[in-house]
Image 1 (cartoon, rainbow, N blue to C red):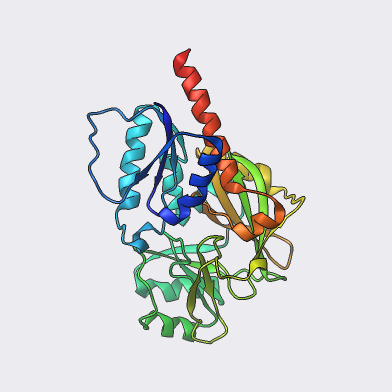
Image 2 (tube, rainbow, N blue to C red; image 1 turned 60 degrees about the horizontal axis):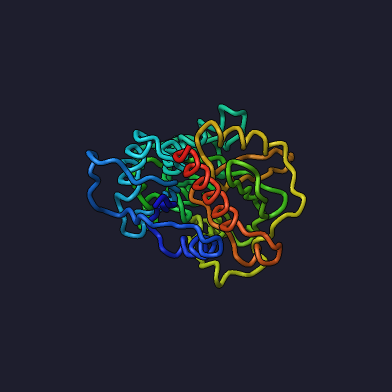
Length: 322
């Protein structure tokens, strides 16, 4: 029987989707892609495939999960299966450089950034941008490698310390720090390639926040501060707030960007500087939702995803029967 196939490597992130499928009665199966064998001689099962592979999969001991998923998606695309967040979406998920170039094609501003391979080249890149700067991993997720450095001395100290993390793909991003007049960023959620809602995220205790897997970066110390991972289950309930009636001139551009790159589900993060200019700094194709914020607003991202996938499944089943 045709069904929805959920591709992932993190059970905790799929649990809300399981409940949503149960409410709808949607037939589904999960493909936990950590390791295994892919027989390219055989066609994939009929159905709708939803890719939830994460850029941070290697931090959970699944070093080649993203690469394995890329192979599976290529196989599915060859056989023309219906895929939500296919190979192009995965390529953007695991590379902020690729994200920024794709966003720029749609006139969407991203922070000034220099991509660096080799720790020795980081200081020159930072000096070129001017301090303060942010370091982050090209293949991110969970705030990997994110540090705010206020001075050349702080950068030198950080690069020489055990706290410096080598990126899994070898690419470090040196980025101009964007100072916001108020301590928050906005995460704009899309399902089916269309705007769902926006959530305001309090950054008074740090930045680079994901609704379900937060990483707080404190930069009070001259050394650049420390990195703290906080479970949303114990985070302050008002850290995330869905913005009623949110509007932005970027929404149509975001939707065009998603359509051009075959992305059906995403959370796009932006920050507004002191001049009122919005900068887009992250695209999450493996998006999660904050349950407290959703409960207060009566909105449910995973239910919206489940409905979208259920609709695609019914459409594909009718097409095959015709």
